[in-house]
Amino acid sequence: MRSRVLAEILALVAPPACAACRVPLDVAREGLCPACRRALPWLGEPLCPRCALPAPCAPCPARGAAFARAWAPLAHAGPARALVNALKFGGALALADLMAAQLAAGAPPWLAAGGPLVPVPAHPTRARGRGFDQAQLLARALAHRTGLPVAPCLRRGGPALRQLGASRRRRVAAGRVEVMVCGPVPERATLVDDVHTTGATLDGCARALRLSGAREVCALTYSRTLKA
Image (cartoon, rainbow, N blue to C red):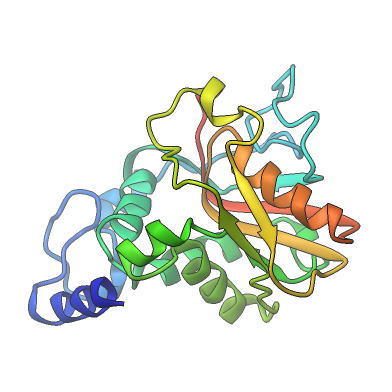
């Protein structure tokens, strides 16, 4: 909570700047300067509906995943990566709304029928250190734009192992991601997170939901790492 309060105070006293290149902005909510907006690495069609990578993706890395579909509007590079980092590590909380707007603008048709938005939970240690959970912020901002409900029914357990910087082999190791259900599970659910890298965390969340009664789980993230 302290980190969140400090971030909000800083936003009031410091002049707004582009989250990617730090060029001064006229309005804080803009998030990105015009040049960085033009440089956003949008993912064009065709995309694999299972793993969200550009098609063809064979062998599909999500072929055994517990989630049925995945989608992200942007590659995790350039200004998109800068936005994620500014939200997650810089406490730029207002960026969640910009990211949600970009998600909602190009969201696939299945989002409307995908059920409640389920934030991918940060480990409690991480959330306490930052003062917020970035996936919850993103899910709430997306709910505001789509009218879909938010169902925060998952929590993380186990040690707070860092996924950032870990090899793919370590990220997907069995038991590395420990996820538990902590509330009513919808029959259909759409997981919401900032980045889809190997899909290990999304898969762990989807498996927890499926084991607790969800019939279908999809995954929606702001960006997709093209090389995990």
